[in-house]
Image (tube, rainbow, N blue to C red):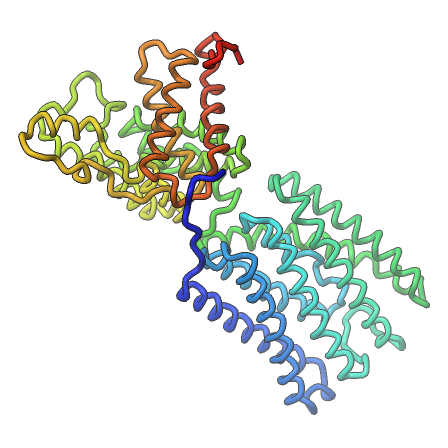
Length: 493
């Protein structure tokens, strides 16, 4: 059973942007194809109008089909248009690269390059295979048409000669088969580990597999010694995806503001300017954030969410407290300034740290997904301490909305995790002698309160996952309790 939530589809505006991105990239691809046709020779130039029509039809079919597939089964990419834009730009770039590198030899068309780029940009790794398949088929279709229009007499810097027509066609088919195969392997190989050494190992495996496939397919060619003499080109092309991605991925990350594993690892470096400022100006909040990050990472792993994202979001969730650090208990040393001001003023100061956190995150160039957690980790919860104080000081009715956060309820499971871990860490820290049973009751109360107040209505977290989060936090504190948890039946679990 899942907590009730509202499934939001992409808006017309988001779809319009996706269509515009597709049309623009398609137009660039058509222009690149026409330049390539023009460079091919007189046979193409004589039928240039026909080539233009073919390029338009081909591009419309591939780009239109891709957009339709994304609309039907990858609505996440449409709603987060930065990702779709970066993916289709990467695919178009690789398509153009393959068109012109084929002037040297089709074997230099780097297999799986689109997949290698997108697998490091996407939060859903299977997207890379789809875009790689589309790009490979599109490049093959353009180059095949070019070969047909010139009766196979296509210029190749490496591989010309008497049988250049048959050789070009054969090389094109072989490298396309290798490209699709590698494109299926890359998402699996790089899905959970994008470390530099691992990338090198994957590059070696891709190169070795490409050479093996090339040698096996060479056995079907009449002039086996001739085609085997070009295997060194396959070795070069096998390394190109890993090498080129090291330059392209950071650029795409920065230009489109994407959240990738590598970007998240960078953000959790404690030498980041905003974290250094938090440690210097609000050390209590900084230590609290580190503790929340540890719990959030464990909880994310437990329910199958991204631990890098959870840790990064936890590090920055309270940076808004930098605007008034000494009005928060973890930064106080005995004196509490709230004792000397009205509860409505206190509520406004505390409430403001969520919106101030968002502003700071954007000011320091943090991704939107991280910044959003700062205004979601308290949702619309009431500040009970100030609300109760206001009721004691006021004879009339007190509107609880005046003493509630004016943020947004969590829209992702990571934001829900941060909400729970944030409250749990602070509440357990305030307990005199925390033990397993008391902490269990506390966590059950925190989660039940947030469910009853509708804080999880906009995210797809289930009751089972909330229970896993509760047990994970208890387990994280287990080393402090030294006793097993007693459950209602009296059993020790």
